[in-house]
Amino acid sequence: MNAPAPPLVSIHGAHSGEFCTHASDNLEELVQAYISKGFSWVGITEHMPPTKDRFRYPDEVDAGLDAAGLYRRFARYMTTARALQKKYAHQITLYVGFETETYSGAYPFIDQLVSTFAPDYIVGSVHHVKDMGIDWSPATYKRIAQRLGGMEALYRAYFDLQYEMLNRLKPQVVGHFDLVRIFDRAYHQRLQIESIQRRIQRNLELIKRLNLIMDFNLRPLARGETEPYIARPILERVRALNIPVVPGDDAHDVATVGLHIQEGIRLLQKMGFNTDWRTPL
Image 1: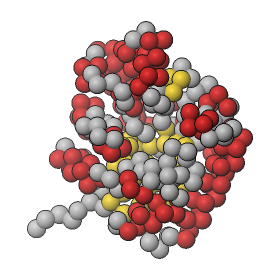
Image 2 (image 1 turned 180 degrees about the vertical axis):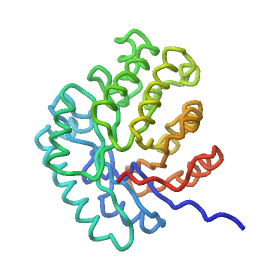
Image 3 (image 1 turned 30 degrees about the vertical axis):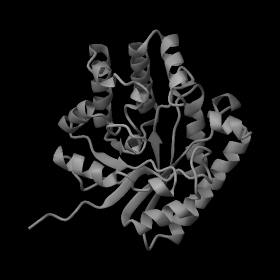
């Protein structure tokens, strides 16, 4: 007799155009899409607002939004997400959280956001290295690597900052662990460098000690990349440490709700991961 299929879940999902400038559709539409596709539970994890104007994303700058306005938008997000959590409770379990940043001054601001808005959980992510956004564009990515002294230096700095973030925030979920490879076609070779391997292993052992969940982020597949975050060589180490991994679609519109989730589940099953998914609470 075949075992029942694992439930559809997303631990890192539901960015919407209502509250994220580089997304589209409104949050309720995304929630309805998750329901229509049979999801058991979903974590809604919008980006935190910036501490200062200088840390806005380029699309936020282009939209003429300032840090104060983005804070107000974030407050509306939390209110809206809580209302949807109640409205659809009989159809789906929603966890309301947010995704963190790691630039200067972020940590005390995150403490303030947690105290003010009481999210169900936070996703600990690194999008900046030395206060520069690494996932904005290939040109920006290359420029940051050059400033740091090359690609290996960028990877080292990224994983060192991630280690600091994990120790400081102890987030319930670790977001897209190896985002640093986003514009690096040679990342498989890079991941074999001893100084980088040491940092990856150190960070994974900390995640294990802190009993955190790792986001198996499938958004790269939606962009035409060949594998999710976490890359297979790292995922094998994660499995060896028996760290819980949960799929995340990182949806940015209705069209990407649940995209590649089944593919991600099959891969995790094949590698022997536990698919009795741990929730972020």
